[in-house]
Amino acid sequence: MTGDRPGAALLRLVEVMDTLRVSCPWDARQTHESLAPHLLEECYEALDALESGDPAALRDELGDVLLQVVFHARIAAEATDGTGYTIDDVAEGIVAKLIRRHPHVFADVTVSGAEEVKRNWDAIKAAERAEAGDAPASVLDTVPFGQPALSLAAQLQHRAERAGVPADLADLASRGSAPAGGGRGVSDVGAELFALVARARDAGLDPELELRAAARAYRDRVRASEHAGRD
Image 1: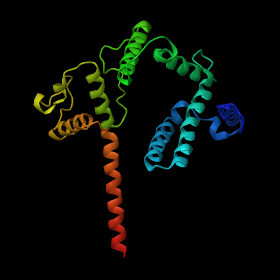
Image 2: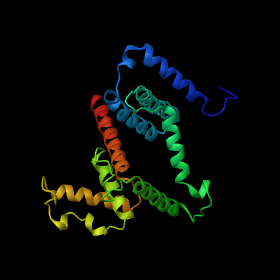
Image 3: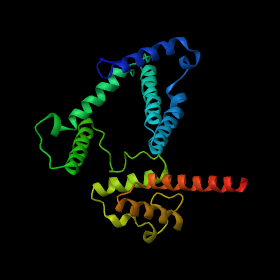
Image 4: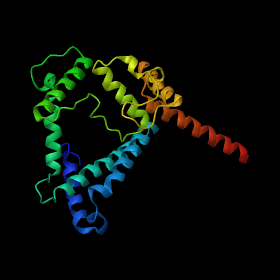
């Protein structure tokens, strides 16, 4: 690939995916729904590789994540009901979004630092939704609840904080356990876990990554104990 323009190999990946979709029985029968578990699994495997500190492993796993994007786009391109799109549409969409949300790079806006960049991003994003007529009723409406609970709690707190929501609302223990919409209440343990998320964020830590680090440390201790028992 020496001398090729950056991104040339991506075109080859698209070509290979086109061939597989036509010529491989397994690839030919996949749908967005059947691939959904793989999309999530590959992202987790990429995160594991990142945490391992192995650059080669991370490169390999990022390739698997990229394959999922190309695969979904290839499936979408086959739609005949007017909802289809191609990998170029996906790429053009994110390029347009990045340029639009970085006016300090691609236009004449001046920023004082990273925090102002984040504020501008949020303002531009809100303006886009308002223009499209799909502005959320709450600052938390766009937070995906399908993510792991620890990262979900952190993202909810982060979004609320950036919107100026009073910090004491995160103190679930002092506000009772009954949810406003009915259903299961909040136990003391749940409230304590939510408070720990806030504590981690105050310390500048990602609670999901911190718990993953603790889980790895526990795994290593168990393995060492098992090994010692066999000696």
